[in-house]
Length: 491
Image (cartoon, rainbow, N blue to C red):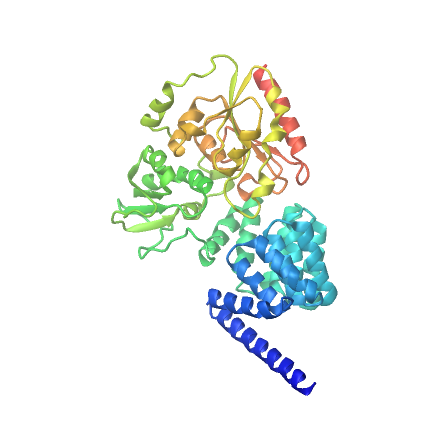
């Protein structure tokens, strides 16, 4: 008996050493070596929970979320009271979009460890994505009970309050986050977005510069000074794109103003926008982002130009069109057969980026069915990206134009042939608005700052009409309004 006990003890020590080695390899980033050691342990003890969990983490890091979920669940089946395992399961399930299952795992974490703030953060995030905004706020407030100085929790509360349209309360939360953490650039940035949303441009544009302190992927730095309105006297100034495609299209309106201020304008824009930008007057040169840029004396991010010009809500340069269809793009669609009778309506229903709130600003194509029964109207899809796949299963009377589109110049040429563009809040809204085309923009309850609040027009685009959700996720009411307006237009 003693010899058997000793052998078992030696076996356990060996497994412990293998596990220690596996964890060390894993922490050092030598994942394959760690994986081999975990498997070696499991060949001896198939219910070894730490190794099952380790393999789950390896799979998660490799992006194999289904395998990760399976392995972590097996670890939990052995050791259901392990907080780390339950939290990891909630994290993986949330990454898979399985919100209800993720929330169940996170609630189990909090049963085991009520003060687990990471679980509360993830729960608040999952509840927000699921549209359960009051519950989301409650989760973040539980964090403040554990850590009253959590600027991140206060910041997140502000974000959810903004989604609810409670702008005064959201501002108070951001202010509290800043008092807790004066260097919290995200809170300052979100305050700028509230300023702009409310039309307070005098406060908003200076605060908006705080984005340059954030890890903004497309914002570049140059050795040349940033232009802030100084006399240019013919100097070459680079205006460069920095955020989304829609942002770039919206702020290209400032090019003539910079030219009038004495600058020789060089434009650096995303490649898919190069041909369109090159058709603008008053531009000395256009480069696609990543290409070599000609010599210049000054530089300015496009979205810093309102600050340089001291722009207010009343001085927005909103003459349209400021975007022009390039001749070669116009010629490419000239031979296409278009209906000669009735309205020609372009449609975009989905955002194509992966921003946090894209789901809220997109509409499933199927929901447009009632709108498409409008008489004397022909519908054309301008949709690009993943949402365009919904066309394959659709039987709606919708002509797909995506095969004619390689860049924004092509889209502009097609829009020029239409009578109306109906779109969710995407770059096409700015393209059509910048072309001076009648455009209806369908907005979520909590809309982007540039559309302001409580109005159905836009000071940025005189030909744009806004249709807003009366409550979160209520696209039905919006589409009913659109159908009514469409019937009036087509009659």
